[in-house]
Length: 371
Ligand code: KG4
Ligand code: ZN
Image 1 (cartoon, helix red, strand yellow):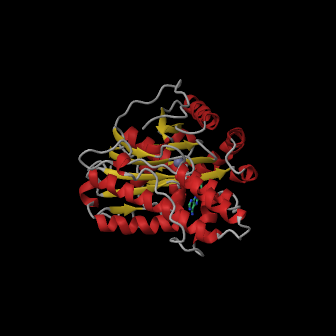
Image 2: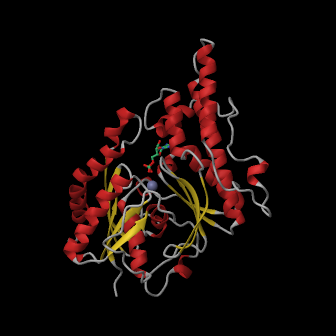
Image 3: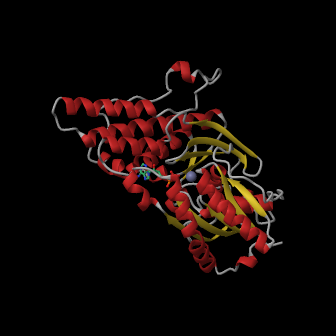
């Protein structure tokens, strides 16, 4: 039996994503973003995001079907993000997917957004003809007779975006995903956005700080690395509660205090130095904790995902530290790192191939769906 043709729908935040895959083959990945409507508010407004999904969904679906050259009735299954994410935004995608599933009689698969980010690692030729994302050399041993490939055994995933910051261990995408650590307060992208606001750099803050940091000295300020004290981290033998967790709210406060000191003294704020030092603190603690979590869980392949994957310093330092630790790092192309429908379709195809039962038509949106 040929690989399943799966439609994937993603509406958990500000991106309306519709992707189509045939098994591990990416056929279409169309995305519409409502970010332009959120900029003047300095953050994603849930109500606006939900309304934008209602408007963008059908045209985005049309484009995806046209790009893939398939008809809705050819699709074998419909996969849709059920959570985590903004409740109202999730409901738009879920309702659309339920309508399509009912109309076509195809099975519906509710998908976990975080696990879907990792499923990008399954896609062949994600660069549209370029090499597969895996840098490992055991592709042959992973190519099963039914044409189904797997992620390297015990894959790690570092997911960093405006809404989430997690390190996962994935034994199998269909049944063995473990959350090793996460942020206990702000997401990494959220820290970038809040810090950019303190520095009057605008929104979204990630790219602005990334650019400003290039002109600054990352050692000018020593900003805190959250949850790295021994009482939080413990040891490998006796791990502390927050060994693999992050905290970015203290960092944001420290940046605020530094800015305030310059302003009070009537001195110009050294924006580039603060941006570079802030970025160094974020990237240092993200990469050191992620690599150590991998080492302590026997993970030798790490996948990076989420919008912050676009950050140049994060890519650079993570590559360096992974290499030192003997971990092979995969950074998918950015359109597959940011929220998209292809990742949802890829995980849907995986669940179909693994013989997992479809979801009920009553499946709810779950804004805090665990992995
Ligand atoms: O995955 P994404 O598009 O949407 C979600 O948040 O789910 O990620 C957006 C986040 C924003 O917080 C943005 O500031 C951050 O990713 N970001 C970056 C960069 N580009 C985007 N952060 C740091 N450096 C960048 N170059
Ligand atoms: Zn995401």
